[in-house]
Length: 218
Length: 212
Image 1 (cartoon, helix red, strand yellow):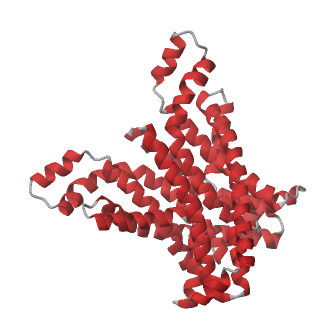
Image 2 (image 1 turned 90 degrees about the horizontal axis):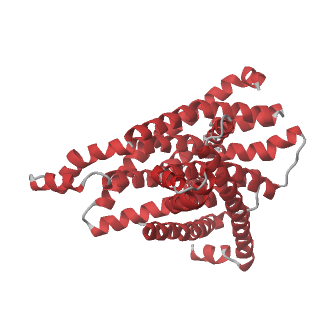
């Protein structure tokens, strides 16, 4: 058994696996940045209530939130070529994850803004700020503090969800571990241990960060 | 999209049935396991709390697909034969139980501590007080997040497609590759998922508002 571990963790295999971790992190970070920006904008649009526009945006967000991420990955990677667009695998994964996570974040942002005492906005308006100034300088900073733990835990699930992109053959960690143990079944357990530990380290570090931010806020 | 329903309606409905079956089994099992670990975490015993913490952190921080693949690939090789549906349902149960444990625990925490103190000073043991006084009150707070967990379960059950679980996603994929109309097939699958998940998540949002 120990020999299997030593053989499975050969320098070549480890280099290959860590390359997969790199792709996992690349897709994660790109989607985190994209979905944070888009999610914040959509959340504000949903809170502010522009006539009709906010309702339509809200409905689209709810539709995306209630679909499995795997289906969105399929849509982007296998569905789009059907209407003449053929995306590369890494951009396709980032695009699909960004769409899905933006919708999740929009909901967090909206409920974060709603959790701010309405008296704050009234106070800002009574002191002569416009609606947008009140939102930007008074309400949003307070809302952001309240929603940081929820945002970080959403990012944890984003990192875990990158493993789903194996299904469109994104060469990330899980996919590469399958390639390695596909050559030698003795490597199955060492590979599962390795990727479980690597995912655990990345996600646990993020959840420690979320805990710390939650404590500091309280 | 309509003709996909006409041509493959039976297959899609069968897939939807498997998806719902797997989600409901996983919900019930993970509710039991999750409540158990939530109680361990709230127990006065330090060792029990440690065990619960380790269980929850492990299953919260490892991707669902890795857990499912473990049961699909490793267990049949060394322990026992297992089909994709079983492996997928076990993976979903373990993964979700960690989230449900956290939900139930915060439900227990939101019950006024005076309830526990009152029960204890009236002569109930810790576990009696938990069982008859605290848990029934905690579950009222827990219902909306549990509903949201069920929505997550239905969505996450699409990982069964990786292990040949014959769920909705698996069937949709099969239809997409045999009919070559990927857009229409995936849209049909999406509509079926939404029919299940949208009403539940709207109802849970309504419940949340009423409780607040």
